[in-house]
Each structure stands twice: as C-alpha cells, then as structure tokens.
Length: 169
Image (cartoon, rainbow, N blue to C red):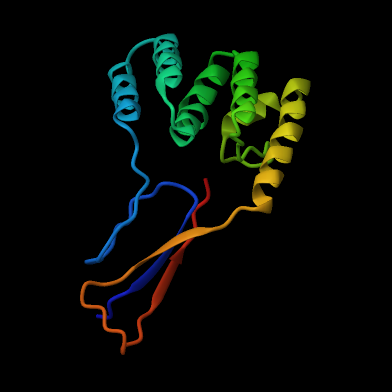
C-alpha cells in the first residue's frame, strides 16, 4: 500500500487524521474557549436562555477573533434565531464586522439554515452588504495557508499519490 503525501489547505481548524504522518498543524484554542464550550455542554438539558447567557458572558472574555467567530457563528446565532431574537443576532454580526470579522453568510445556501429567518429583514440585508464589503477587502491581500504532511517513511526518490483537502472558514 502506498503512503500518501498530503497537502492540506487551511481556512478552518481541522484535525488531520491519516496514516503515520510526520507532523500535524492545528490552530490551538485557548483554555478560556474550551472552558466556555465545556460549560455550554453542562447546560445541554437546560433552558436555551441559560445557554445564551453562558455563551454571551464567555464571548466577553475571549480575546481571539477566531474563537469569537466560532462562538458567534456556530452557536449564538442559531440560539438567537431559535428564540426569535433577530435584532440581537444582527447586532452581534454587525459588532463582529466592526472588529474585523466577516461571516460566510449566503441566505441561498443551506449551510446556515437559521439564515432563512432573515431573508426579508432589511437590517440583515444591509448587514450582508457591509459584510460582503469587508470580505472582499480582506480577499484582496489574503493568501491560502497550507501545510504538507509527509508519511513517516517518506523517500524523496519515490512518487506518492496526493490528497488535497480544501476547507473554508
């Protein structure tokens, strides 16, 4: 069986799994982020409002934009939408834009199903325009980050199949 040479383009944190790789590169998250996530799990059977309260207070303590982004997009946005706190969600996204975050929101895409609730909301449409401007500005000088995982017994004289895995943030 051939060993694989893997090139991994990163736009998102992902755990590399594979066969006997020499090195792995990951985006490390802070202890504060892990604490917030663990605390949120404790409230899994609690009121959604308790979950929101926990995540909001945790969001205030995080310094990392990446970690803030994950809390906003992966949890709080959905919880605000589920509780019909639409303005609070939009305020959160606008605040994220002001700190330099942009979001991969496309109401036509099913990736974030909660966005369907916002399709006819003028504030949301205005936010999307601002978000797209920030995203386009960021793309002007952006570069794809990548890393290569070599098999442990890698031999420069041998040819290997390659796997390219693309992921976006």
